[in-house]
Image (tube, rainbow, N blue to C red; front, side, top):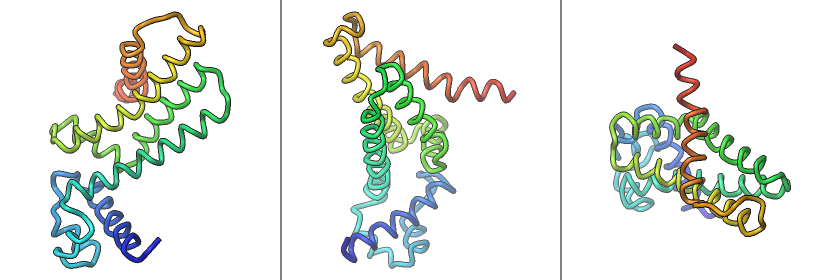
Length: 172
C-alpha cells in the first residue's frame, strides 16, 4: 500500500467516525478535513466529494461481506443453514456496526438520497447472493421450481422483521 492509499484510508476512517456520530447529512467536508488533519482542498485530491468518500467506505463493507460469504459457502453447509447463516449474520453485522446502523436509521428517518442508496446496495448484496443460491437449488432439484426473485424478497423481509422489528417490539 503506497502513501496515497494510506492517507486515503486515514481520511476515510476520520469521516467514518463523524458519519457514525452525526449521520451522513450532518457532516461537512470542512469537518472531515479538520478531523483528518488535512486542508479541505487536500480532501479533493483523494475523493471527488462527500458522497464519493462515503461510497468508498460502503464499498469496503461490501467487499468485507463478500469475503465473509465465501467463507460461509466454503463450510459446505446445507442450503437452508447456509442461507440462514449468511442473511442472519449480515443483518447482525449491519446492526452491530455503529456506522452502518446509523446509516440505516438515517435512511428510515430522513430518507436522504445517499443513505437510501446505501441501504439498497446492502440489500442488493444479500439479494444477489440469495437469488443465485435459490436458482442453483432449483436446478439441482433441492427445491421446487418457483419465482426465486419473489422468494428472495420474502425471505429477506422475514429475516429483517425478525432481526430488527421483533427486537424493537420486545423492548417495549
